[in-house]
Amino acid sequence: MSAPPLPDAFGNYALGDLVEVVSPAGVDWWPQTPGWWVVGIILIALVSHRAWRGLRHWYRNRYRREAIRRLATLNRDGVRDGELIREVNTLLKLTAMAARSREHVASLTGEAWPEYLNAECESPAFDDGAARLLASGSYTDAPVAPGQCAALVASALDWIQQHRDHHA
Image (cartoon, helix red, strand yellow):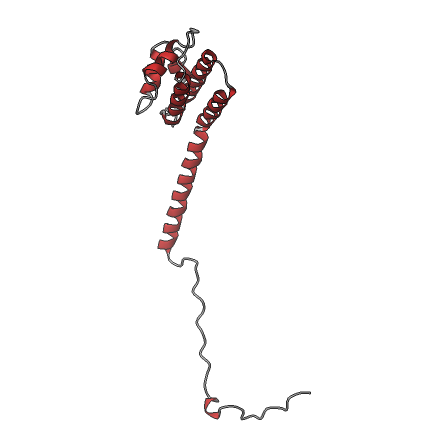
């Protein structure tokens, strides 16, 4: 069943001579003027530069992340006080050599060692008790006060996080 054919004068006869309005073409999102090309190139350069600096910063601080991981492992292992002091001292020495050249750090011992560590931070990380432990605790098996090792580990963590990196 099909519908009967429509007559030639179907619908409103007054609209027979009306021409349809043609819509304009859509607005292109691609920049048309050279100014937008310049702005785009500058933005791409800035974003690339920031990404490069962020990646370089992340890569250069890998020694900090490794030192924090090792310090957390030392703190969990339940080692003796004298051994913990020696291990923290070794870890701080390795971290300091990664941040600065070996010639500046390797020869530091005694009172000069904690003084150097405190000088590398904006606010000193090691108080007098922790500084004494770093200076001479590795060489003696003298008894350590109960909270002193925990304070030393906390100070070492603080130093690792905030010391200046001379390679940046």
